[in-house]
Length: 414
Image (tube, rainbow, N blue to C red):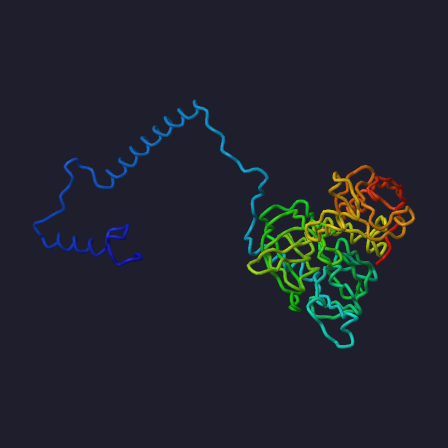
């Protein structure tokens, strides 16, 4: 029997009809099925029609393709540098998270200020990523601000085990720190990816310890691959440094700092560091690119610090929209009207003091390169000089231009 009890849906003649026709013949009924005048059955007519239709279709197709081959066909537009996605993207998120989760830890900072009161505030909680190990220790990358003012440091692994951690080294400028723990029981380290290959819109996941809720996973996209944002190193409201970061809309909250930003291959491509939180603002999280992190982390684990050139000058900007100089202060500098940018010396110590720099000197050039702000001064020292270099400084003192040469020393630990 067919799927339906209705002869209309059946491809075969109903046996009930065959039996009815046989029965009627045996009863010598007067009606009979009329045959086609041309002597062809319905099946034969259908077969001939199908054959004719196929021949016509082949002829028409040959005609059309023959005309197209004689004409120049326009090349299709192709999107360049876009790799096709492979597999279920949601499954890839699951696999990436499973790959990196065992290498992400929660960090508890028992700050000296709160140690006696046994208080843990949000700033005492953070995250970290196990990125390498040797026979004795496993090493963890986190943010400097996570361990800032640290007393005792503890690390909680994904299996819930709490371990004592030691500070290997930290760098305030890059906001990177490295911790170490006993290697026993640590079987997984994170794979570090190439952050320079990130693409706008690429799916990423953030893993960390927001608000003490360890092993939390969020997902989003890369909103911007190389965003430069101003930073106040001294937290005094004056932007005296710039940080290159990956911008993402994956949720990053208090405690996520130091955690992993991961691509769909399960590789760490950034260290989560901050978010912008304000009324009406959402989806603005930032991570330090892995390529920048690893250069700093390798030097910290080897030397315990980052060696940078040191001039020994404390300064403010001559033209700073955030902290403008008062009119009487400008008059005291007695600068030519042509001098509108530079760095005003507030105090000089170390190499700067030995070279003769003093209060109210206005630095305008390093090695004949214009210096417009404290930010430019610091970037020039850190990026274009090394310890032991001699630096030629052009500055104004009481309206007169002067030059001195300073031998740069290593920046002391703060």
